[in-house]
Image (cartoon, rainbow, N blue to C red; front, side, top):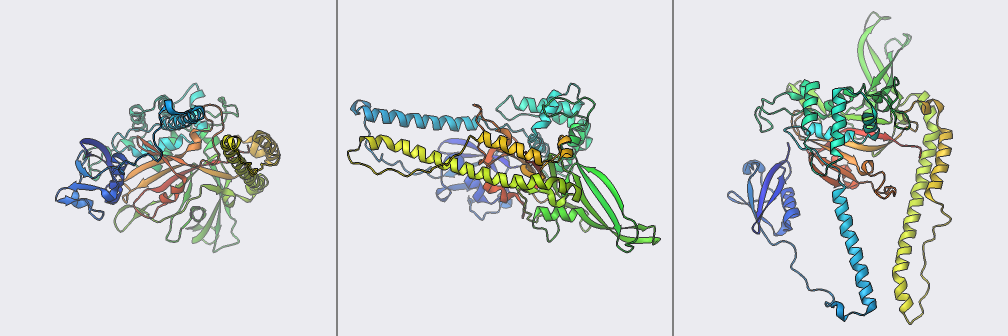
Length: 542
């Protein structure tokens, strides 16, 4: 369920705060602290009949949207006297003035940097009434920059791809939360299912639009993009060639069916195109890769022509083509016969930020991927070591330069300071060019000719759609996209910091930075946000 928009009144000011009734009152107090500065331990939140406690049941409080809570408590610590006495400009000598100017400059740069980071946040999408499923899906698909290239360069597009192109274009030209009215109307026109009315009243709005499934939205969007023309390596439209979805998002699975009761019966092999790989979640599933393997190996009953009766067959599936963007569907909703409806599987299943797909491909494809995959793993370790050396060197040089004025003015002879020696490191671009040449020599020729497929079999996680809540037909969807997707290059041309592994969290129109350390909090285990759709991007050679 989406959070309630409520107000808090403190020190004569009325402030807006989100209240999530699925979380304990302590979370609400922390949200109040963020806007008032009153620490939770000194805070009193007044409710009907008393004070809000950490173990208060929200059902008894029954908060409503727009409700105002009175907050009592002092904000922050009492002001402390300055550690050093205040010195006026006219009382300073030249060296003190220079130091004051330097500190002012550094602090100004820091403030400007904070302001820049705030302005550089990608925009969110307004919730138009149970449309979080669409908002989260659209944000996650922004992690495919080639899609935006294909949409912007194609001269002729159907109505849904054209609406998505316009939506992404409009989002890139604003810093405020965008209202996706036009795109939503087109989506409901193309997929009438998304225009269903909620008559249950479970979401608090009787007669409003019903909540929908984000995974179904992802699939419908991908299907609606199937006629978008493909692109070449320069980003130009390929007329009469393969379609974009077939190039970058479509995997191929080889399925082999064998009769367990008649080993002499010839096996049947089929090739199937799929937009996603499923991760089945059972009572023993703890990791994503084991759930994927379980989904690829199954048993079924069917008629055996050699036995003339029903028999047990084993189906073994392996991927014979890996796309540049591999979608993994965590199958968290299953039909329960005992209650007659879909229910959410709450089990905690850990997903990987880096995924090696060689374990789920055919032997033929594995032989093509292994040489470049093995070497790329070694190269990534070498790159990480070079970054460490350069960072240590930079810190040592900054420390040395900041201490030099004091050393020059001191009367006592100082011992030489030890500095981290970077060795004979060349420019990073030289290493990358050398590595690219080596990896291209190892890459399989057939895979290189299949533009849009993965030539490494190694993937980075770049986008996630989560579901929050226990009900399959309700709850709330949130999108997460890796920061590096939006900041491959900074404004002045410098490369994005490869050590920055943080994410953006898109909770409708509320966008915030989500630390990489918190990824483990969205792998399930309760009613809170659980990873539902994951998008992996193939590691490039360069």
